[in-house]
Length: 397
Image (cartoon, rainbow, N blue to C red):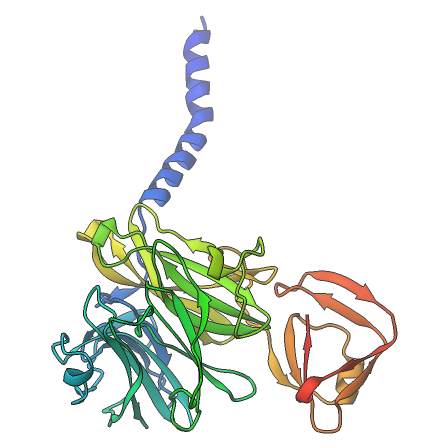
């Protein structure tokens, strides 16, 4: 039989290139097509998520009519659910340009056996704004109590009082980050009893960006982490929003990126700039469940005429820096430990925060191992020594 070597060479070439072609096709499809794993009613803007303790119901609150809401039993399938918030009378006085019901960018925290809901009242492009506060003992048929204005800004100010992010530290101190464009992101300490700034407390600048910055989100896992959104939102598929993060040893900053550049001077790690489908992802919140960190944000869907959609995904870590790639989703542990237990401890994921009981402010160390946030051993020493735990709190990092 006569063999057509050219024919078989062509066949061989095709067979060898099929896997490559399929991989390339898969890459191209994955690069251009994002399929949201969430289901149901996913239209949101500036979302924040919390799980109601009494019912184990997941709830999303977001920009909309007197703060819009959604609910889910499994964190996958969502449906509309009213927040139940009513428009307070102070809105017309503080922000005359607001229609009395269009409230933006909420944040919510559960403490002292009630839910504390912070929300923004403003008008687009102006900094005559206010952040309001309401509390309720439940989110199912809530009974919100209005606590009035938390912070306010006027046209003469160089900051904008919207986009609240409330954070309670390990020591019980309460902080509020806020801000949009103008001179950037501010931080102020609040009275835990009222949820409002302590008397005569100045605003602290913690981040700026010349092409626009807003939507702060404060968290803590060993370091303090500040998430923000850079550039412009609210322009559909033309939005240029990006999710950015920096970290600090001190809640007041400076917050720096991997290169050590202060976020007040242009620093910040971009962790999501979107793709062909997800345009302008941003205004993220953080939700923690079962030792997994989730990032909650919106994006503009290029396959849905730029509709603003909900996205929920795990947040990973690599040597102490959050990202959307990797395998570690567990936040560093926070808890109490006795002196004897500490001395017998051989390994611990770092950085971590250990709170010592009274009388154990100094601890002898026979062996000290330093681990990154992802669990990688970075340093081992057998030097004997003592570590002072200031105010009963020891930070090993």
